[in-house]
Amino acid sequence: MTRHFLVDTDLSPAEQAEVLDLALELKNSPYSRGTYSGEGAGRKTVAVIFDKTSTRTRVSFATGIADLGGVPLIMGAGESQLGHKESVTDTAMVLERMVATIVWRTYAQADLEEMAASSTVPVINALSDDYHPCQLLADLMTIREHKGELKGLTMTYLGDAANNMANSYLLAGVTAGMHVRIAGPEGYLPEPRIVDAAKERAAGTGGSVLITTDPAEALQGADVVATDTWVSMGQEIEDQEVKSARFALFRSYAVDSAAMARAAPDAVVLHCLPAYRGYEIAADVIDGPQSAVWDEAENRLHAQKALMVWLMERS
Ligand code: CP
Ligand code: NVA
Image (cartoon, rainbow, N blue to C red; front, side, top):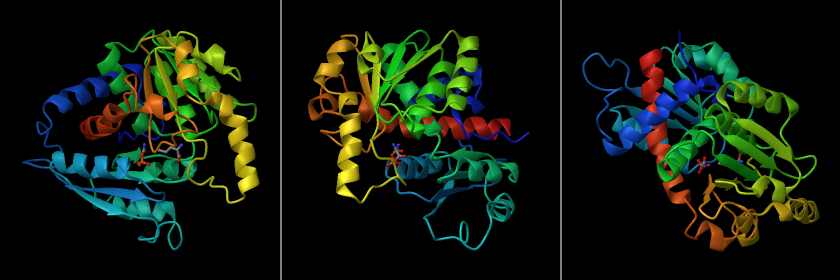
């Protein structure tokens, strides 16, 4: 059966741990796996499609595929027939006859599901409106490097708690047995279906879920503090008044020194980047000693290589 990675919970807790173990192994020996090269490897090309802009995801997939002996075929928005002239299903039916893996950054999660449903090669979600599961593999890997363990740690996310990162922190965090706390303003909290899925997963891993509008409650003693932009791709606001009103709503959820004073003294700070200093995160926090954001960015490479190897071995 072909395995896909469309949402964090597509990996069971044991499988997530296997991918993270492999990611740490590949960080130490980057060229030890020839998944897309060598005798018996078969197809070499990996399609990497971007309907939204990207720096980290684009570079980490391109370099990671090359490290595994493959050839990245990067397609930007509007460069293929997908989305305007041709359906997702018809595109999948063509790609799956030529490439080894499909990586896609797009808007609707339903489109990724449609691609996967018609593909006999693995499909990887490189960010959708709903989830950013590849980012969470890198984040969990970074936490393991800094803290040793994941299970039992408290991970707090502040800010736009209705976005893809909040959803993925929730689902990937509880999969790892973490206590995940999500804080954002009323109207910007995760949808009940995602909270329910996280609670169900947490019940089997010893993790837990707290959703609150109170940033202080979420931060108390946290081992990991994470945030993300207050305006995600696809939500850009032209009207300055509307934009200011949105920022005012999020201001008390900023990760600044006052917020960090509530977390554990040795808490690590994560941000998937790109970051907006002075908005969701203060410059002295992201550029300060508790920040692990550059390790986190580098780990996109190692975690995604591990994911591609793992999916290819099981598909
Ligand atoms: N964190 C992340 O996915 O970055 P890019 O949007 O630059 O790929
Ligand atoms: N929530 C952000 C993440 C960027 C990596 C966005 O979707 O724009």
